[in-house]
Image (tube, rainbow, N blue to C red):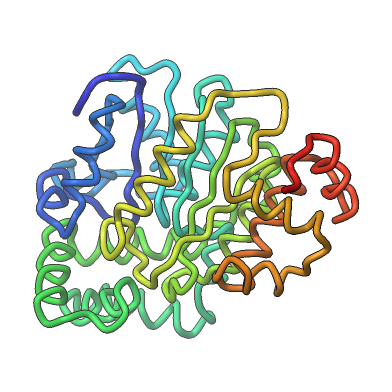
Amino acid sequence: MGAGPALLCDSGWVTHLRGQLELFSFGSFVESLAERFTVIRYDKPGCGLSDRDGIDLSFDGQVAAALAVADAVRADRFRLFGASQGGQLAAAIAAKHPDRVEALVLYGMCASGADLAPPEVRNSIVALARAHWGLGSKVLTGIFVPDPTAGELEVLLRFQRATASATVASRLLEVYYDTDIRALLPTILARTAVLHREADRGTRFELGREVATLIPGAALIPLPGSSHLFYHGDWTGVLEAMLSFLGEPASPGPRLTGRELEVAGLIAEGLTNHSIARRLSVAPRTAEAHVENIRRKLQVHSRAQIAAWVTEHRLRP
């Protein structure tokens, strides 16, 4: 869809090219992206309109399928967006094929699927999805959307059951839980933004912070909200953060956002993270995330060095 630079998207665990366009605000999200990019979407192996028999559901098989899609549309270089399980896949592509990825946006992801829940919980969810897809999808819906309304529950249940069989859905979930890309993240060279909702119960905020910490120079962008689905809840906030980052030109020097410049100025005034949070009316961990981003971008290790940078650039009021 659309026109402009290629943007390859992996929206997560299971997909349906047609069905997702009718799911909450997914269609509006994609249409907005298509105003600036050629949005490349595809169905994961075994899902939606893709073949459902004799397919490779392994993580490497999913990576190969995504690259095959890019090759098919002759996208030699592209921007890359991955959400949740799709974030792991997108990060792996960026790490293994740095010549192809111009910029990377990750949303609601973790470095290791084992961190999502204790082993007994993960095993129970996979077993339930495999044995009774209806009950399994209901449990997963409660994880993705806390306290869903009856209407939201019905829509998600219908969508999930249409995307894949119980066998495929449970296997893809099992692969996600078993995948650990911590060793790959430090090798990523592309400009990277890690978007994560602060109250995401499906993938805790701390797991997104770990991803941003492991990727050199990555910006962690905290977002309000609790839904694990980027196209549910305040989807425009996710869209704006994504478009803002992708619209930034690559630069060898540090480029702080407006909010980061504001935080840097408060650091120069001697404020602590908690004081900054109160001044800006944000959560303490949001202020902490901004400070971490500033340190990475400026390549410094102390608050004093940030203050010195502010003074040098005359950013203090």
